[in-house]
Length: 215
Image (tube, rainbow, N blue to C red; front, top):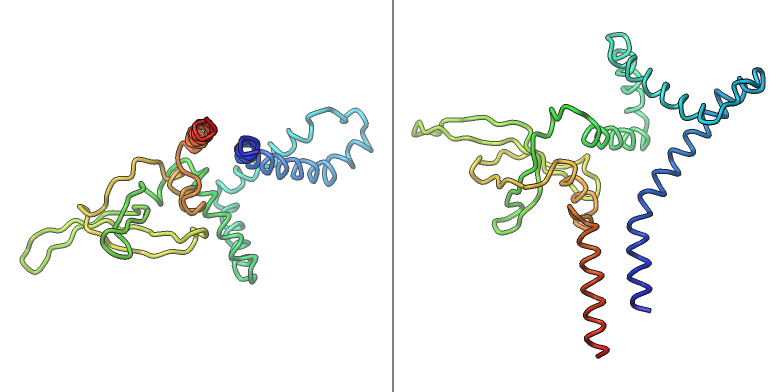
C-alpha cells in the first residue's frame, strides 16, 4: 500500500498540470469553434476541416499580438484594462494573471532582472526576492554605497509584496531563473527547481527504506 500510494501521488504530480493545461486549451478551442467556426461550417460545409479550430485560435492570438503592437491597439487595450481594474474581484484576478503571464512569457525581462536571496524579516532567515534596479548613494562620510532595489513577493499571491532597498553585498545570488524562483514562491516551497528528479529520488529512498525495515 505504501508503494501504491507513493506511485499514485508521483503520477498525480506529473499529470495534473498537463491535464489542467490541456483542459483549459480544449475549452478555449471548443469556444472558438462554437462561436466562430460552426456558423461558417454550417453555411460552407467544405470548411469542415480537422484542425481548423486550432488554426483559428492561433490566428486570433497572433492578430491580438499584432493589434497590441501598434499605437491604436495599445491605447484601446490600456483603456479596456483601466475599466477592468475598477471591477471588484475581477480586477484583482486580471492583474494577477497578467503579471504572472509577463513573468513567464515575456521575452524581454525588463521588470525582474534576476532572483536573489535576502535576509528577511530578520537576520538568519532568508527570502526570495527579485532585483528591479540598482543605484548608488554616498553616505555622510562621502563613501559610495551600492544598493539594489528588490521586490519581495508574498505567498501564494505574488502580485502583492514589499519594495526593499538592500545593500548590494547583502543580496545573495540565487542560482535559478526568475521563472523557477516564481514557481517556488507560488507553491510555498513545495515545487522546487528539478522537482521531478527530487520526487523520483524521494520515492526510491522511501522504497529502499521500506525494504530495509521489512528485511
